[in-house]
Figure 1: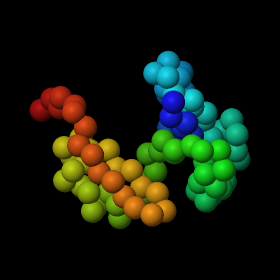
Figure 2: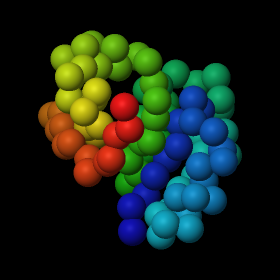
Figure 3: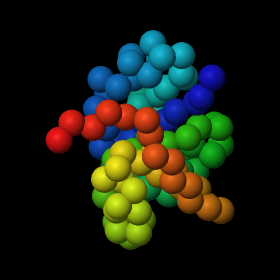
Figure 4: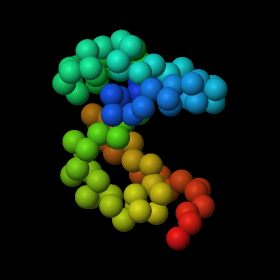
Length: 94
């Protein structure tokens, strides 16, 4: 089971969907200050063994680096040690 902390920039409507898919999921608004800096969210996630589900535009440099892959449907995962890019098996409509 994946433990997910859902960032403020993601709708709370994702929580029941993630839980129905078998994940443990909590929205940041339930456990932290919505106005807290990203570092507080990351510290909470680390302390509680969670990955962060975000759509944070602060990752602009990473998005530029992996722009071509993201357009192909890639999932980009970053932590303090490394970045990983995986092209997802999605059918994209043109």
